[in-house]
Amino acid sequence: MIEFFVLLPYIVKLMIGLNYAAAGYMYVAPPLVVIVEMKTDAINMSPFIFISSQVYYSNEFDTVMRYEYGKYLQSAFYTPIVRGVINIVASTWSLLTSGNLTSNNFLLSSIKNKLDILAPPKIIVLGDLKKPFTRSLK
Image 1: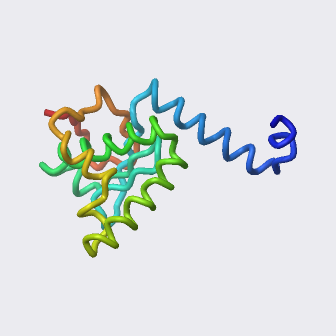
Image 2: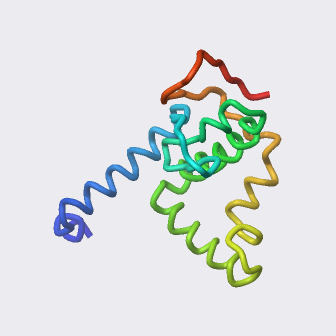
Image 3: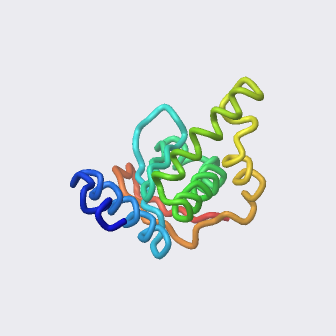
């Protein structure tokens, strides 16, 4: 078994190491929330959560942050790469059974059912903040 790992290309070893390093960070540290200008509400690329500046300054922030924090916790549990693979399977299943990517997606439905308890204890906000603004989840 050790020979298998020794023979892996350096880039594969690096990707595996970064995957576990990101998961380890997510177990002990808060998400890094980056405020950016974009068309979608939010994108989760663990350990970073990119949130639209329109959402950040609106009343939707609480719901969107809880939803993205649920994905963050899933990535910490499964590791980011494995969660990505599971998400592809879940999205494909949803597409085949319901005709869209989210209706029967078992990863996303497990988050949607627990939004009331998903609140990060704290977040680290990065980005070009247009005005001094402090956010907290309700």
